[in-house]
Image (cartoon, rainbow, N blue to C red; front, side, top):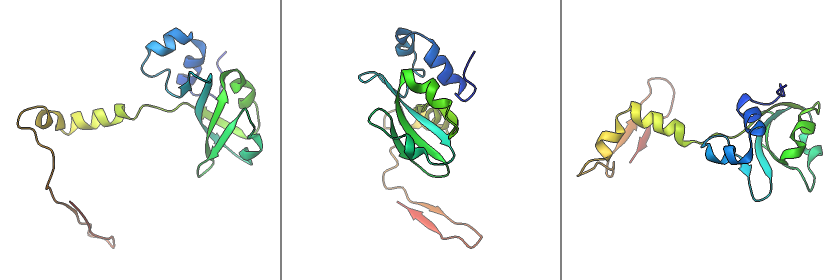
Length: 137
């Protein structure tokens, strides 16, 4: 049965063979092949720094989140700890930017000759509230 504290995609990545993980563009994200460790995003409570060791590295973020680098064989034991609420693997950022570029029609203007670069373009953001006016160039 899949570990309930692990994200579904991470459960799948841990269940498949390494060869299949490498073929996938998404399942291997966060896996450090040279060391056999995973770099994972952890939602926690309490003091997660106490779990820091020469085997497990913990980098605290904010609001109860941390990045934990841990050997694959210790993930199940790690998730059984009371401090650990939820664990997920990192995602590739380019999927998000790719969808945004397609939705905003950036591809047609950047793939033709002469292509548009955005150089020497001035952008202003003006808010009617009590916010600062931002000018970018």
